[in-house]
Image (cartoon, rainbow, N blue to C red; front, side, top):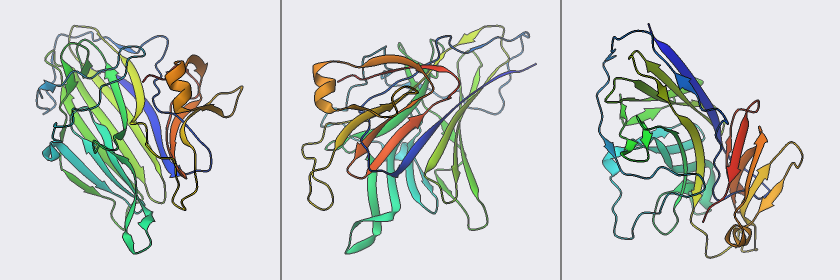
Length: 289
């Protein structure tokens, strides 16, 4: 017998004319739980991947930026290409660490190079993360983050398909299997990020879903035209459609609020990255510097 848990949220990478958020996290007030009734452990062909790093957020404590001399292991990156996006996903944790908007050239003389919205480069550091925080993994405060496995390191949306799905697999030492699923669609900047948890062990697995956007504060706020543009954060709530949270606001006082639905995002000049969770559930949003 298998018990399955499904968790989904959306990442929006798009053109915008409003300002959004540096760091946000939401989680259900009652964390999801999976309990099995049998003692059998299903391997499902998944490797028992090791867990590396210890970078799981605790309440309003953010994940530290990498040290200046820390090199990025490119062998752990998965490249995803659609008609509009070029995405890189880190197998460790399954974070989106690079996002290029192919339809918007960064410079007029190099139209083949799109505007890079997300990038883990030290001088920039702007990434989108999701995880399932649990003592048993895949994202654990004590043992770190899971190193997922994928069938390929390069996924391309073909000319005949409208949807592309990228599946990352990991199995805990207890035998609980996890799938982190990224779904991309043609002519869309939405990335659907979901989890499937299968527990066929005799132990209870319990965890909390979190999402965050990490951004190193920019040194300049000049836009593509040389004009000063807003770079910061904002929150959408049912009561207030646009709640601006600037970098100076975050430095002076941390923001924290629990609401139903909503979304949180970060703007860079005319573009934004936003996490859009389940609109029917309660979520806690907060900032941390």
